[in-house]
Amino acid sequence: MDEQTALDLIEQYFANEVTEADYHSALDYFIGNPQTQARLSLLYQTILTTSLINCEECQAELPAFLDPITRRAMNRIEHDRLLLHLTECEECAEEYLELRSFSTSQLEEIPVPRFKLPTSRPEL
Image (cartoon, rainbow, N blue to C red; front, side):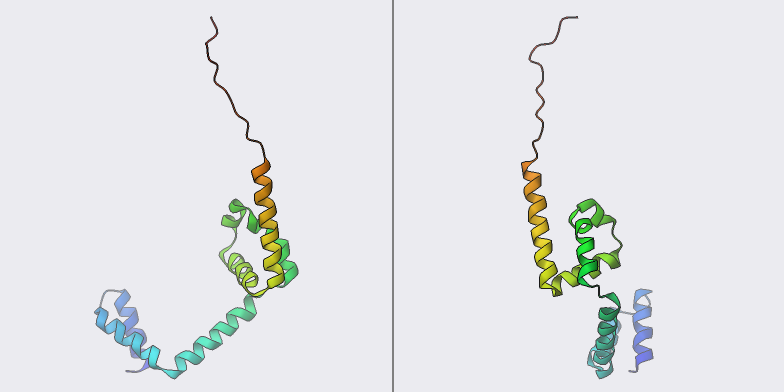
C-alpha cells in the first residue's frame, strides 16, 4: 500500500464506502511508516512555536481564565495556548493557583442574604 491509497481508504471509510478493516489497514500503514513519525514531530514543533505565549501575556489572561463565564467565551486557541503555558511554566502555574485560591476564599466569605417568608398574611 502507498500513502495515496491509504489516504483514499480513510476518506472512503468516512463516506461509508469501505469496511472498517480497510480503514484499519490504512491506519496501520501510517503507523508503520517512518515518515509519519517525522511529520508528526515537525507538526508538533510547528504547533508549539506558533502557539507559545510569554509569562506577561499569560498572567494578563489569568483573571479572565479564572472566571468560568469568560473562560467559556474564550477562543479555543487562546484557551489551549494558556493551558499549554500553565503546564510548562512553574511561575505562572503558581500565580494561577494563588489567584484561584484567593478568588475561592473570597467567594466563601460573601454573605448570602436569607429571606424569610412572613409567618402570617396581612389582613386586607
